Length: 170
Image 1 (cartoon, rainbow, N blue to C red):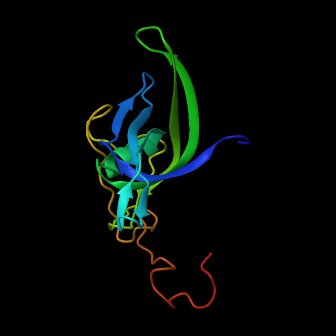
Image 2 (cartoon, rainbow, N blue to C red):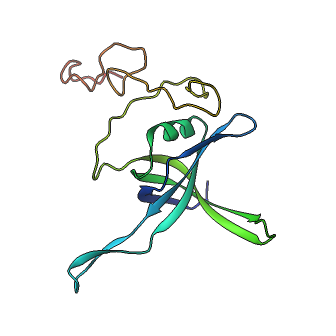
Image 3 (cartoon, one colour):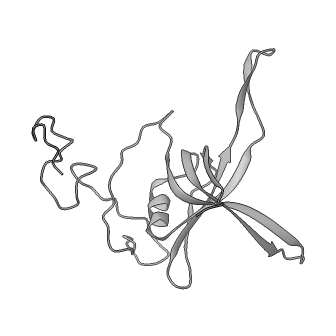
């Protein structure tokens, strides 16, 4: 949408994403990303950390289940989304404003780590949890090729060089 503030944040998760369900059974995961700028101080000849930004973030629906099942406390992540501002009254009746990141995309940073990506099976928008709502972790989906269509055993055009000739397979 026009006028939305889209940002990308790189930082570490301060805790495991908290997966909850609305009264209608809609999954939502909430978490905080701590992003700390680091600069080089030439006089001291060392790197120094700046003030950390702690940004609350949320994801919804099946995306929330993927995040809760994949990311954990301390992981360095790259998150892109839209800033949302909401106003509320605290317990003492004071008006407060909170700014949160509504995440569109998130994943682990591969600068200091490696990751094994596995495509999740699509189940029409529901979750792939054992134990029903509110409990359990997602079942890990396993396929021979990370990007192959679930249930398909045909070769991927990109996995076997030269097997499809010069014509693209699509």
